[in-house]
Length: 140
Image 1 (cartoon, helix red, strand yellow):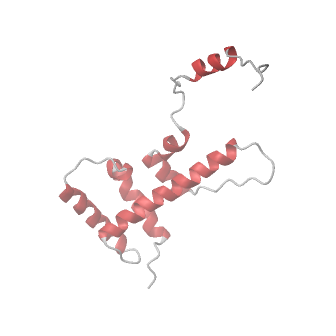
Image 2: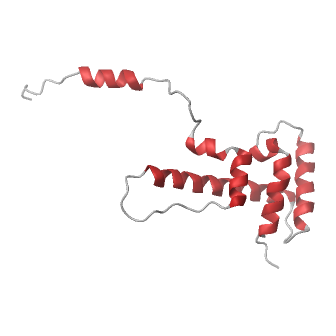
Image 3: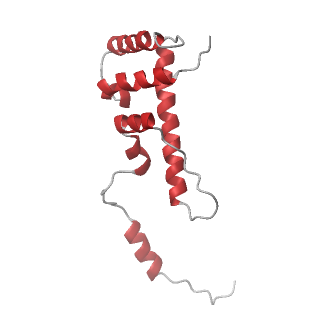
């Protein structure tokens, strides 16, 4: 039997993670025993739907899936920011992937926080660049 995760397993995994957002985002501060028990429950639920994996493998499946979706978002942002020319190479995001994006906050990771102000030295650097002149008349 194949070890490939089925679409039903991905759907169930997303549904389970929607109930535990802190686990989904990877920011839980719980005892190791509780985390291990949670992943054991997930493994039991998902193994009933398709190929069996142990709890640590299901945890890796979740982490890898989030990483894959984040890469797609980053590639789409890069494509949108490009100057044009050639075919549109945006990668399609499925409704299930949209659910994971909303659940984990991956949009913020790749696009930043909307309406956030940029504080830094960028204006100061521009002022220095505009006011400084080089003397290029001197011979070396």
